[in-house]
Length: 296
Image (tube, rainbow, N blue to C red; front, side, top):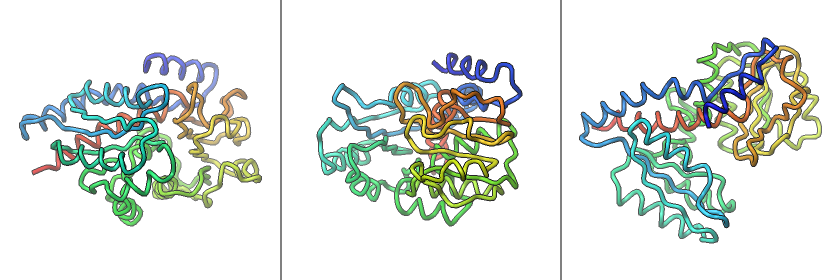
């Protein structure tokens, strides 16, 4: 699948000078180093780094998005224990399952796979995630620590954005930036991370804002995290701008950006598929290993 995504990224770039920030390719390049680090943890602790995943089954079967995380962990020597909350179960049942994962296993990280069945699950679960296991910065305490301390690692999806910009040497300092997302903890942390790069950021703009296109046309860096396929046409972005599509809970491999108008006018883009998704998984694996490396 990653090879197919990389091939798709090359086709997207064909005939233009736009830089395609290929997350599948970058994730593959990082794999050997992650394997080496996992082996070093095993030699020191006498066990492999271990991640617990709590996910939510759908009517058709197991929770989506989990299998690739399990596969990526296995490829570098990270152990995974997982629990899929049955479809239709309430938030109290999910909380019990999460508590059982924490108490029954020696863990280096706990990852709760969103989206939730409904909004009530966030309050029931996120407050209960132990900060020492919070690899994705979901617990309220870790969110506040990240917002106020540049030394705290961000959510793994934000780490993926930063890693792609760094690896492909896309300098965004001084650019006028815009983040298209509804206001919530994740979008505030994403905004903070991009601002810390030296981007001149406007306030968050909702994907449903009727003036969205006007805001986009004034930006030199557009990061969209709407989780709604085709929210914004890439043709609306200015010539020479940088586009980062963070939409990855989308059916059919479609991102928040509609790429049908072509990307040749851009300076660089993180596309969907093949961009944020593979690198978010890679950053999750790395975060679990990092937590294990910090164990006494």
